[in-house]
Structure formats: C-alpha cells, structure tokens
Length: 282
Image (tube, rainbow, N blue to C red; front, side, top):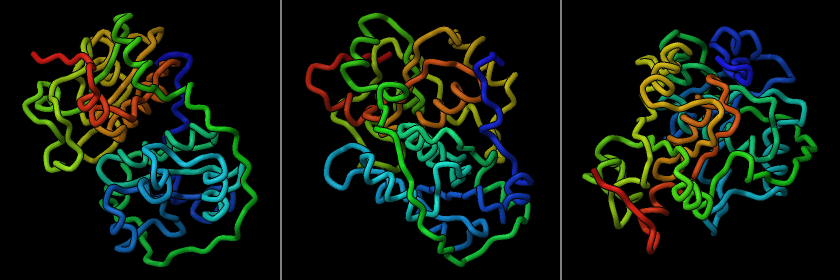
C-alpha cells in the first residue's frame, strides 16, 4: 500500500453497528434496486437514489451545487457529518454515490465493506421505518469534475498519449461480443469493443464472494503485478455508464493509494455511440 492510501474510508459492520445512534454519522443506502430499501435497511439509514437524486433530470449530467446542497440538507447531512455508503451488488452504486459526493468535496465519507449483503448475512438489525432527520444547512463547494472525472475529449487525449485506461466491463463487452451489459439491453451502444489500449480488468475481480473488497495484497497482485498499473500513472477507468468503474476508482484511489485516477462516466454508452471514436476489437 502506498503513502496515498486511505484505508479509513472502509469500515466494517461492527463499526456501523457501534455508530447507529451517532448524530455525526449518517448511513446512506444506495442500490440499483431501489425497492430493497423498503424491504428492510440498516436502522436510521436514508436512501439516495442514483437516478432520481444524483442525476440531472434532463441532461446526462449530475446535479449541480444547489441541488447537492438541497439533497444533503433534506437527508440530514451536515458538512461535518461522516457519511457511510452501502448497497447491493458489491457496493457498486454505493461507490458511485461516494464518488459523486467527492465531486462536491465531501471528503468525510466511507464505504461499508460488504455492503447490504454482508449486513444481512450476519443477521444485523434491519428496519422498515424511514427516518426523518432535521434539515441541515449544507454548503457545498462548486463541483470539481476535473479532479476525479474524465470527459470524452480527455479520454481521446489519453488514447493519443498512450496513457493507461482500465475497462472494467465483462470480457464479452470488452471484446464486442456484447453491445451491452448482460441483461441490460437498454444501456447498449451501436458499436462493440473497447477504447484503444484499454486493459480488461473486470470490476468484480476486486470483490470476494461475500461482497467485501479483497485484501490489499491480492489487489496489488491484480492491478500491479498482472496488469502493470502503477501509483505514479494517470489512469482513467470506464464501464458502460460509470457505476462499475466507480467501484474500481474507489479501489485504486482509497485501497491502493493511486493519487491520479479518474472515472469516465460517459463510458461505453457514450464512446460506443460517438461518431469517429476509435475502437479496438481483439
């Protein structure tokens, strides 16, 4: 692990259990399946919907500064609140929400290792009550996209400069055999393949069967030894819409300590539909 690593951004179920009644901690559930929250969630947790809460309702972009302030205030999140994210499917949407919060500079954030699955599998308490916290007066910085977010022109420059790109999709998406993630045809593209020079490192390789992140030594083996990534590199990760790549971004940034990693949230649904964009197939 490098000096840049921030392992304190990862907490276990016991830590969350010990802080359920801490007024300075807010637990946030963010799932792909928003119906899961109503079926039972960590007591006191609020839900943030990645579509309805974090995205602009018209443009393909995130909410602005005013919208983010309103969201946090409504959920009872203050500027000094420690926000702990968790969710389904190895925390992919929890990492996505975590990433969006970093766009606005809310650095005091954590991921519950193992997410919803581990909490339930361990028999931890769940609740169907929706909490109602007093509104705060949250003040956010202007969205700082340039730090951790990549846009298509920056990706194109990355390709031309032969800098490292990480394609975290499935192998069949990488080769172009599938034009969309399996079972997600509505999020496909006109062309299949991958961005030239991108390494194929499927996002789920970083997770154990119980949804937790793999140990640092195994992550170093996967990203460093097997795929040649280094902490001093400028790296861009992508998937189809940015959710799986936000998981990889979290791993590289917080668990392995790579200081310059960006998430290309336009990902393959943009690149595979972009006129004139170069594409590789094996």
